[in-house]
Amino acid sequence: MNLLFEKETQSGGTGMMEYDAYLGGKYVYSFLDQNLARLIRLREAFQAQANSFEILCFPEQRCLLEEYLGHHVPFKFLDMKMVEEALEMEE
Image (cartoon, rainbow, N blue to C red; front, side):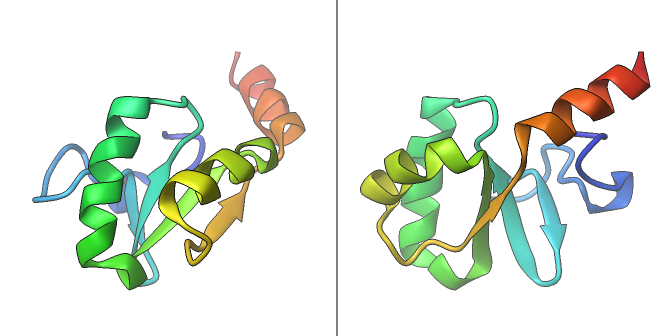
């Protein structure tokens, strides 16, 4: 998560809901690891506060997420090449 979010925006496992960061008044949930258990919990939270979330994912994951969460979900996409380059720079 340190590659994606500044330390002060990361949730650190705190709060009532599961999220990865809080940016611009929105809870950001990352689906990059394809953790289905987290996705189920997100859908439950999303039903109560849909306008408070956005999903960070790879473009290839959008279809699955839209089918499961609905078409009103705001997405932010991350390019796999950018992730690979960032990981190489970290080594």
